[in-house]
Image (cartoon, rainbow, N blue to C red; front, side):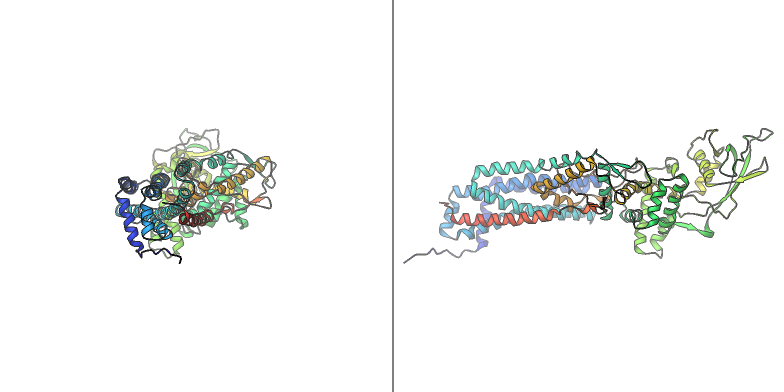
Length: 604
């Protein structure tokens, strides 16, 4: 009669307690366990007390790299070697299996014990960052997002590594496993770098776009093209500072289905009068639409008295110019009268609209961003009138139904007074920009009264902040307009560029480190409230400042539609979640194979 093995009915929880007891009697394990959790506490404190957003993001990303690539990796190896090597060598496993439970039940119990230990450190880290940060800074979306995807990614990494290393130990043995895991740990730091360096090789290629009614094509560098589409991706996902205002103005400037918008871009590259029409279109159709323009009876009338300094006034009555001095050699006194057709409201008016105005919630969000942006700009550029003087006059429009004149009291004569004359007076008196006698332009001597006139009567911060904001965006939206509305010349440079992009995209998918880690960078994001334009440039946004050199970021390929680049090309990438899902399935199969191997192996 065949005799079957009878196992004692020992609860799985009892075995788990036994295994925990064994582990915590191992001094090296306790040191490792304490070190990992202490590291999380220390970094979470620094993370919470640092006030600069992009620095916090960089610190957290480095923490994740060290936590997963070094500490957790070594911790997993230490635990698995303890259970599958040391406890096999000292016959602990053999004694338990020969007297108590089945092999499969024991391996599963070990697996649960290992998982509980490793996941407890992840949970502790997640809790440390959130609790400490809430105590110091309160609830923050940035911290919640970063730590949530760190938690999800860590669970995935730990699960996959445990399954893989168990498989390696059972099938290859101790030494080959240590060699392979050491290589994997090293590759975790450098495997993502080749793709990033290869992508940089494409930066300096020049591409050409065919423009209508133009002999010369529009030329753009490949790095500028990448920046343009990355910029559009940031805006459409609202991953930028002043996100509501930014998305609103970008949506307006990239509404290429509107013929008037297309005409605006054509006017921008035309003669000066056409360029002025482009300003007027944005003034009337965007800024007025969000409620920051006063029009009609409330428009301002102004009277200004002064002494002519340079009276080469030619923008009024054509060909009629006054001499420098009157016949008795006295300087010419003038009286200027003009009326604005419309003007920007003040910051206090915007605040009132946001707080108590009868406007839509979406418009309140946009206006609140504009209010904050303007205040931040003024705080960074206190003398904005002088520093951004070139923007004065872009949004100055006189009432054409009003008699705008400059009257010479010495000559008892008057001329038409135009926006150009006002701009010249402003630049001379406020911005202190001299106008040569040979140049055409009207200026007044300023003993303080002229500059005071502008400071008191033209205290419209939006007059400058709106143009600064437009200039930020127009640099990118103009390139986006050309790239998506006109055929690109498919020359050798274009062929090389597209081919290299495709090769890099394929290798990034094949590279398991790139595909794995790009899930974390794609979803955890950055400190978006620090992604904004450099105050010292006309239009240079800090899109890549927070990127970590050791981490990968998703790469997209360009789609062509009728030889024009698809507007949504920035979405043309494979979501790394598919690769990570496949990796979970693959390593799960490895564990099932390991389970079968463990049941059949000789452990005596």
